[in-house]
Structure formats: structure tokens, C-alpha cells
Length: 87
Image (cartoon, rainbow, N blue to C red):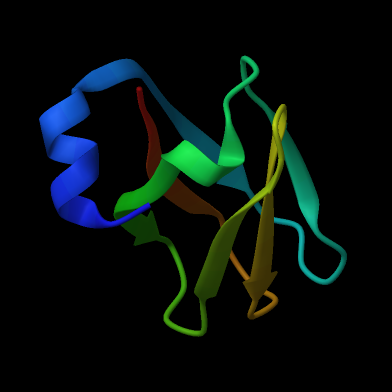
């Protein structure tokens, strides 16, 4: 959906959360309330880590889940996320 169209139609829902993890490798699943993937955006709202070798990737995996993948293998990382669904 073009960004301009999304703003004209308005926001339907916003979901926010944090992921705290010390796991690496396989994707971690975050369960969310169902959204229309074609009308939703995932916003990365920041991260904090107790190690410097940390990189986290997030994506909308399905209408009811996000996937998070972390590189690095030491310490704990906290990632903030937000899913905005438009009409």
C-alpha cells in the first residue's frame, strides 16, 4: 500500500512490545493479535544490549506473528517493536 494511501485511511490498530533474549540462531516467534499483513508496518523502536556483538532483525512473519533473529552470542538484548495496521 502506498504510504500516502495509508495516512488517508487512518490507523486501525497499534501493537507494541519488547523482546528480551539471550538466544541466537533460529528465529524467535513473537505472537501478536491478527493483522492484515498487506496493510501493516513493523517499526523497530530501539535496542539495548549487555554485549557489543549484537545485531537483531525483525519481520512480520504472518498475520499473527513476528520473527526475530539475533546474531552475537553473549549477553542479553532488549528490542522494542511496534506494529501499525492501517485501514
